[in-house]
Image (cartoon, rainbow, N blue to C red; front, side):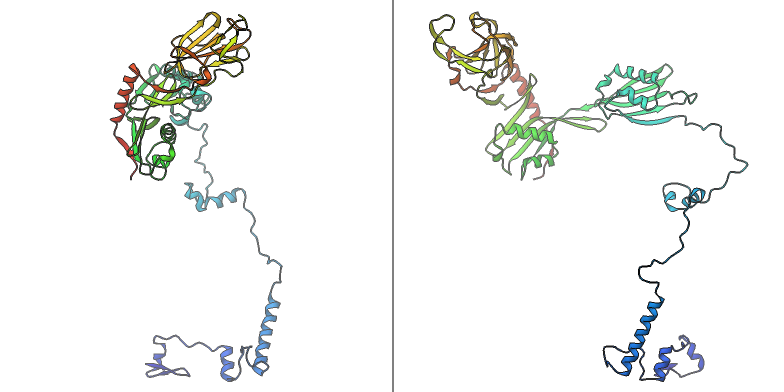
Length: 492
């Protein structure tokens, strides 16, 4: 046992107890020796206390001496410390040092020192080639299929043969840019010759894949039909804070949502669409058996506002799209447009005829315009007559809804035929001076239930109405779409 006191260790047993669990005592430092011999001497006193005393001056001298020693031993302020810089590696030394780094090994390279070639190494007279090359190319916007094959290393003869086979099934110009081509090139006899085309596979259309393979008779085409399901996609949900965002979040493409909002705006102001209203969209969809999905145009637009519901079905007629309600009623159109841009020279009413020189009723408007100026239909209608008509010269008559008909006289050339359906603004002829006319102008008449009236006094508001076979086909299409279940819905 041992005890510690102010002077050291006191042992209760033998001297061996000093080393039992204790380290040997260290030699005292110079400061400890001076402190032991001169208890009142302090090498580093507090310079903030006892200013002017002997101890303070001793500490100040010590501090000054230490600062002087540090300044004398310092290398100087602003002078850099020179150090040895190793020479830059180059050539073989750099390659060897680089080979032993970790980065090349992480990228798959070998590491370590490279050994020189021994006498057992024989140089190759020619580098061997892979027997088969499997490549992937992308059809660009220019150059077509032949250009893509040639860029991939296919010979001109094989490329021409492949294009001829593909053209027999689908026009090469119909292939979409970006189409992926899977190309397999075979073994060649010499390196001076192009590799033969062994196989070519690509998606020609959404419902068709083509595969060319080399057989005993050369390249042969194998069409691979792809089954496609054309069931439309129906999306329903709650409007919430934004109709556009809600429909997009439910899975509707942006273009379909824009068409949906545009079609609805013809029947209901968008400001009256509330957050609790429910939207209903039906969109064209094609699903291939390989898993791809393609969305098309909007077919149906519906909005349920509780007490009121808007239901519109897309209907394409003559290249123009219209939206009809379940009864076949289309958008209400208001106003008739002037058929030609020009100067009014004679209005509706009694006047002295400029050629006959007697007073009679002028049943229309005379609009002067340069010869050849296009004449446009004032409203939607059907051509009832197109040809010569006495003093009217080249004349066109259009029948509109609600017993309204319009006539266009003195044309230089007629651009429509009898029985043709025309839209408002469609060109029906050109300004001329045929018939009883004093110069190039358009004589424009309007009849209501067979009686001539002032064209300026009539504002024709028409509603498109389907009838006959069109109405039957329309109702059949509408019933089929209403049977489509909802394929995606926004959570309430």
